[in-house]
Length: 73
Image (cartoon, rainbow, N blue to C red):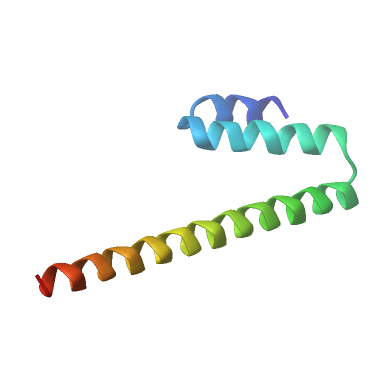
């Protein structure tokens, strides 16, 4: 396990954080709970991406409307 921790320290920060998190989950929880954690993380990321898409789509629609209005001036 020490090799995994050393590898985590030698990586970019985001990958190091991921390795540290994974190591904590492996050390503290059994495989069933680890799977529950992964499902929850996936759900959170999925919801966040959907929210971002919705917000960006709304912004694009507003910008298109502004552009159309500018065209008519």
